[in-house]
Each structure stands twice: as structure tokens, then as C-alpha cells.
Image (cartoon, rainbow, N blue to C red; front, side):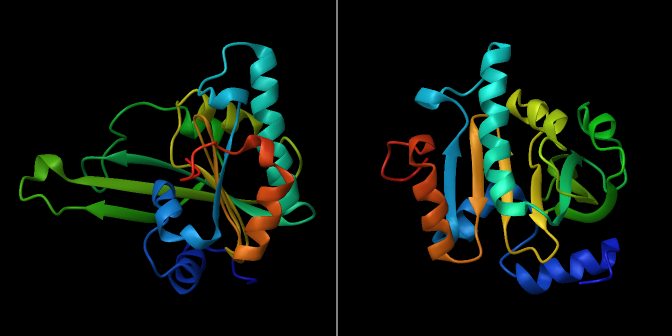
Amino acid sequence: MTDHSPGALAALWRARRPSGPPVAHTFRSAYADRWVRFHSLPGSKRYPESEDEYAVVLHRYNTVLNELFADRHVYVVTSEWSGAPDGPAAFPTPRRELHPNGVPWWTDSDEDDPDPAFHTHTRFYADLRPWRHGCVDALLRAVADEALVDVFVTDTELRRIHHPYDGGADVVLATPGERDRLRGRHADWLSSRPSGL
């Protein structure tokens, strides 16, 4: 794909990911046959409490990101939601400060409830950059603290997705075999639960 405009990215998403919009917390169920979850701290601890623990979190995130995206360009995607299509974010987050080059490329509106007070509009922002180890560390720290949600990194063909969350990362690979190989390389970071959660 040579056209990296928001419209072209949206069209590519619809073609490659027809199961739904780019809502990161849905990837686990939408792509279950190619999904794996890695925990970001030993013992499945959810939140880092020291700089040493932040170092572990960033090491685990970046190790997998490097394996997925070394020597490639990636889209970095952040989001915010509002009660109105063009209204301000419903609550303040550091999204703008941490992702200043993100441009609007998708809005997912949920207006199923008959009461407009319960409508939500999630806006997604993307930027294109060469992947470099540590290039999203500030975003990853905010995710680890749950200051940002629904962040993900994907290659320009949308074949591989890394969705960090507070406590770990959901990763979608191009094939089940690729997923199995990645899971095998980082078996110590997996959940002990049969569900993989």
C-alpha cells in the first residue's frame, strides 16, 4: 500500500479486517485463531509499582514489538471517546500529548440505545513511522498505568497487530503457525489459565 492517507487506511482495514471496526479490545475474539496474550509482569501482576517493574513491562512489550516490526514501518493507533460525534473527549487523557502526530482516520459510533445520553463515539487516530525499539515507550507507560486504552501498533498491511493493555498485550499474527511460534518463544510470559487470559 503506497497511499497512507486516512481514507486509504480505512479502506484497507475494511478489506483486511471485515469482522469489525478497529476496536482493540475486540481483537481477541475476532481473531481467536491467530491471537496470543502475553502478561507484562511476572506472576500476572497487573500494574508496575517501581521503575524496575516499568523496565520489565517495557522490555516485554518492546521484545515482541521488535519481533513483529523490525525494519518496517508501522501505524501507531490511539483512541478517545465522546458522547457526541464531534464533541470533546468524555474524560481527559494524555493522548494528544503522547500521540501528537496522530490524525483522525476512523470513528466508531454506537447509537443502539434509544436514549442519546448513552450513545458513544470512539475516534481513532493513526500515524505512520518507522519502527524503532522504544519509539512508543511513553505511550506504553501510559497504557501500563491505564491512562490510555485501545492503543495498538500494526504493520502497513494490517497483518500483525500488537495491542498493549494494563497487564499485558494481545497480539494478532498473520497465521496460526506464526502465532504458535511467537507463543513458544515467550512461554514464560503466558497465562497459566487454559483460556490464555
